[in-house]
Image 1: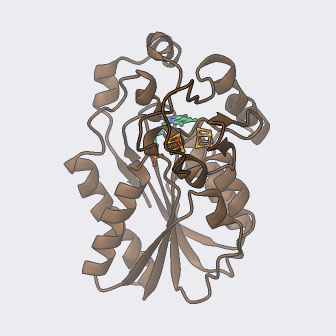
Image 2: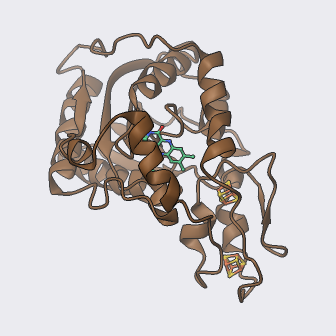
Length: 273
Ligand SMILES: Cc1cc2nc3c(=O)[nH]c(=O)nc-3n(C[C@H](O)[C@H](O)[C@H](O)COP(=O)(O)O)c2cc1C
Ligand code: SF4
Ligand code: SF4
């Protein structure tokens, strides 16, 4: 059975889980491949899914859903009744709408969604001073990823005939979630900036930017396109790009989410069947 894992990962968490899943699928006997669809250019040409028997989609959660560019890209795919699964990495805050909203898109595109999973992972905004899920994904999260790969494989092969049932419908509309997405820039993040730091003009920030927002020459991000994914900040080999200091918003975030660091750290990765 040929399985393709397509993943979007700006700072490496989702890629790490995709690696664990791919390795496990191979151990189980699958012909498993993985493809990174994070850089803008990788999503400009149609991806031919016809050589594959099943697909797994892996995304980080951005403002309660899969990233905007990833959602837009999903609408370009033709599922042809193919079985698929999805998984998410998230920084310990709200995740549930991501499962439901992505399932809706995949089903609309003709896929049959057989399972889903969520994995705790270092929050991207730790790059600006937050302290969420600093040591995740850890060994236990990776064990859940292996179990997810195994359960999903059984559904792909038909040994288990089930499809995804566990998800509750989210009470949030897509319009409300669009507003949540805009809120991030109003209150938490500013645009990444080089602010005169030394730069070798290697171009990595521009190549790795998922939304085509970064201009390596100027070191400026287009405010209309930038999603604050921080791929450019985390991948710059000169450590030249920075995000604003977000230490001040960390306590604020814990307060509005009404959660403590201890409570967050107790959260566990989980599988939905
Ligand atoms: C713009 C943005 C929005 C985010 N929104 C959420 C969120 O709503 N809930 C959450 O728990 N984590 C959120 N995160 C944290 C990421 O989901 C988490 O760090 C993820 O593992 C990043 O994956 P990556 O390393 O593969 O890019 C957000 C991160 C970014 C950059
Ligand atoms: S990745 Fe860093 S060093 Fe390379 S062009 Fe961008 S800012 Fe300059
Ligand atoms: S410019 Fe914005 S969207 Fe592009 S990589 Fe940097 S943070 Fe992400």
